[in-house]
Image (cartoon, rainbow, N blue to C red; front, top):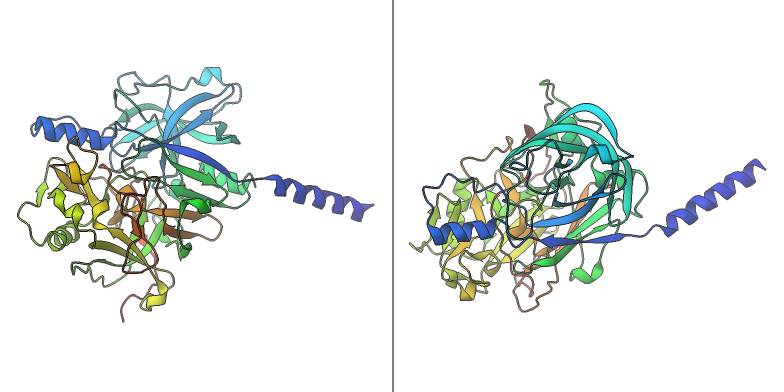
Length: 468
């Protein structure tokens, strides 16, 4: 009878697991993101303004989250550069938190923790208290999920006339929160995997075209949508970091950001970064432009524009302004090259993320495409001087690059799979992740500024050999 009982239980477990299916949730793109703010800034020439340009920056893609019982709905930014879910609470003033605010007294499933909640991003901060409550996305529910209820925010939420994000849901590794002293704060997506609520421990992100608003992209929990990419997914290992916790103790290497080992940055115009050692390329859906060190940005611009004097750095907006006609140079590309194994000197162990130059030419006037625009920016920018980014984080591949690719994040194997995305608008040029020189047609990239990567002190712990 004991053996029979075990067999029955095993059969039930297999049956239950087989019924679990991936869940796809739409990502809504906010028309009133920071690109709109840059356009207004350019139009109004507010060079003396003290208004923070990063108050809504990066809030381009958000999803709907239900919190509590009965559920209270929030639009939150999907952010792979952080690992905490937080929303405003009723203790936050309407000036700091202008939208819906979570009322803890109305949730019958909420448990107070008494723990303080504080998080700092590259663009601002939020603080309040932690609670445990039921969180649901697309029908996937996690009871007892850690949620930060913000009593105060700085430069994170701001009023707009249409579309807004009202919090952040982090998809980064749990070690990110442990480093901050919140080891009990396990990200929602990792709780889905840990509790076998999804068929595979993966989530896949599709951002879609730069100029497609409303229901633009999607995130798939536990599966892969093969209709959203061309070719084959190629995988690369996530790079670990050596951490120092809040007490100053050096911890063992751990996964924090969704980081790949960067081998080089190249352009078809002849630029090469020529790294002496592997660089961490952080993939971050909460970041709008792609950020690189000042010298890299400057030299890359000089190369792709052939030292065009019209290419100037806009200090106020933190962007390089470029001639919009660059978008017509469809044969020009920029490549971010990452390692797929520690012997990265071998071409077969390199993954080339190739982006058409057109994708990186962003209109900053009222035009919808570079061809119709009179003022444009380059989609790769230097880190702003005001950035509050942790040490040894020098490269962030944001929406301006990653929207050209379908990206699979594997929490079980700590790998990232990448393939060229198939955009909704097939008339635009796109990207290639197969290392070929030619780029198939794909999404027109372009984004807006700032980033939501969490601030911390980390050191890249790689064993990648990139020198021949």
